[in-house]
Image (cartoon, rainbow, N blue to C red; front, side):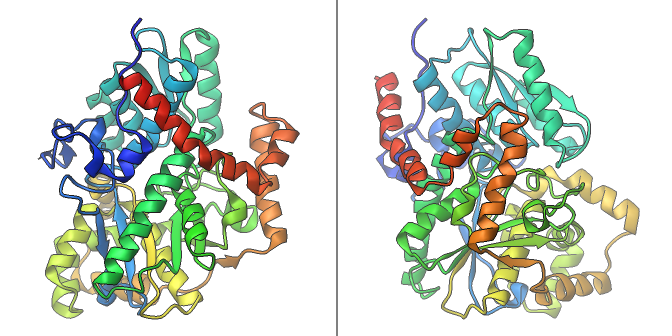
Amino acid sequence: MAPTQLGPTYEEMLHPQRIEAGLRSGPAREEGERSGARLFDIAWRDAERRAYVDVLPSELTGVDAPIAVLYGRDMPTGSHKVGAAYTVLAEAVVAEGLEPGRHTCIWPSTGNYGIGGAWVAAQLGFDSIVVLPESMSAERFALLRRYGSRIATTPGCESNVRQVYDRCQGLVASDPGRMRVLNQFAAFGNYRFHYYVTGNTIAQVAAELGARGVGRGRVAAYASAMGSGGTIAAGDRLKQLWSDALVVGVEPIQCPTLSTGGYGDHQIQGIGDKHVTWIHHVHAMDAMVAVDDRECLLGLQLLTEETGWEVLTRRYGVPEDAVRRIASYVGISGVCNILAAIKTARHFRLSGNDLVVTVCTDTIDRYRSTMEQLTAENGPMDEVEAAVRLVSIFHRQKADWVHEATSTMRRRWHHLKYYTWVEQLGKTEAELAALADPEFWLAEQARVAEVDRGIMALRG
């Protein structure tokens, strides 16, 4: 069988202007999704080299420090998780020889990674199965069906990833010659996409914003929720550029695994998976922040419904164009990250020159049904309620649930990996110990060039 024709290299995703003319499909959209998009659209910039970034107005955040949001709305599938899905599969094709027609891709997910995997697999001609908890939003399942993937559900919610792993192992056992698990929680293609592409893009954006008078051309803090542990890897690159840049992890108060060793169910789809992932470089984190899932849901409704828009613009002076932009690129985990960025600015007393960066993974289009359920439970949001939410959730976001990292704490985070990866999933204690060595991560970062050569070889 002929080699699989792959898409962009890491270098091309970081510098899409280097992609051959005509390969990128442009901004055509259909019902909130990219229409006719292809693999070469996986980048944090559009065809005109404009970054997918927005700076939140201080009238919303209530803090002096500028908060810049990198958003995944305009990537294929409407989420940046498509980038990790592509690189994990591309690296498996390069290193392991995965082939369409011969192998089936299994995508363990809580939604967006699986959606990205289904889309990428279809682009490359692979059969795929997405394994995810049954309580994920109806919109997630609709997208999976749209992209042609088979679906295998597991009991529970976002934090029940153990059941997802068990289901994946069962699928592999059913046909070991064909089934291949592309595990975002352990595959370093996910880490590399965010270390190299997301991290360097954020650095470029910081320079661009600095030239416009926003910040000082550098990143003071980067706040990122952990689902797979991929997106926060951008912080590794930022700390190499600015050693005093703060890298802040984020999880739900209702499932505070790294904050307190806690557990529980929550409603921030895409994060807080009740374990420490293999690819999460915990030794690079400077703090852990926990955010209330209820505030994320209520905040999302405020930002995406007309009653909230009226209050934001008319009573609190948030520019109308800013309100409309934010409403178009924010989802539940995006609000979570924004609230964490506000907490970070408050706790570390960051000033008007200190740029804080965070990420919005997906959009409200994945959560309309969740908002309908919220309204059914609480009644419609009126203007009084909208004003209360703005002030209490955003303007008065407390600097609680912030745990600054110590060497002892980082070792605890590292040791938490044992229970999932060594006891349950076959890693060795020696492999776990290796993750504590900075040289391990430098070696994984250095593999970007090697993978790019492999991709180019398959592209001919």
